[in-house]
Image 1: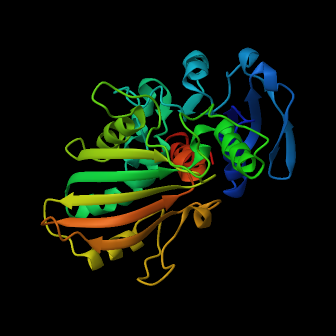
Image 2 (image 1 turned 135 degrees about the vertical axis):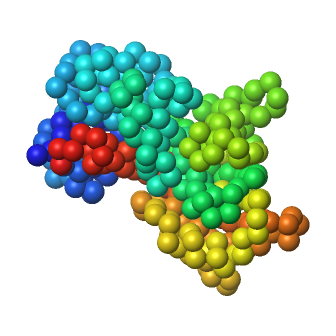
Image 3 (image 1 turned 90 degrees about the horizontal axis):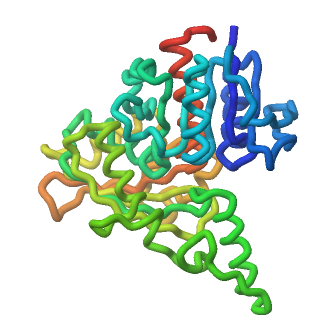
Length: 340
């Protein structure tokens, strides 16, 4: 026996990726509804070898459905997620709306699966920010061995993290550089993204951090350990898919780089590719379309007493969004609903 599943925002990048991953992982689906806003009503999307037509989110009745995977912005989620939850359909939300609610679990299944049972308070589960998700997968097994005191992370985030508009802007600007008769000024981003990097993701806060940087701090504390100190610099780079992170970790006790490498090799969701030779590491273009979080460049930090540096790369549309949501659905089915 399988589940009755709803994908909300099925025509967007993340929604389509959710459908792909549900099919790839052979999630036990008895019935699947794909929803979109009225402007996308009737659009066809693929699920395995099937073609499905989107239904109207505004009029959809969630009664009798088991889970709804939300891949729409916070404004739409604020309206429709409570309706789905009240109808008895468990919401797994990819927006930032519920991540910081103490009554709603924020889950990365490799890190804090035990919190799945807290979903019942509001019948909603939150999916973390894309940059946080891949980092905590690497941090948690190391934290379990040698408690982490502080993390310094610099991100190199692809344009797909800002949606289809961001990908289109990079593509159009790149073409315009080779065709000077066409001018594509910044619209989605604050500055030109083609052949450039932009040290701003989301809006600025009073202390000079951006909202994206704040998210990494708060979410890491909620998922892994509230005592961990985190400082982040988040940068948008002209890459279509795949976020990269340079992570410096300070531990309470010494952790040898070889032991750290062995721990990460055994950890769920991680693939270690760490050869000290030209090209012996993973770059974003190589991680696109993959489920794993890739770790490379593991080495001791000689500037502090108990430090490790590493390079972390993952497909942000997958582990950073759609894959993590499907893994939460699998965990919910396995640990709570137990139909499949």
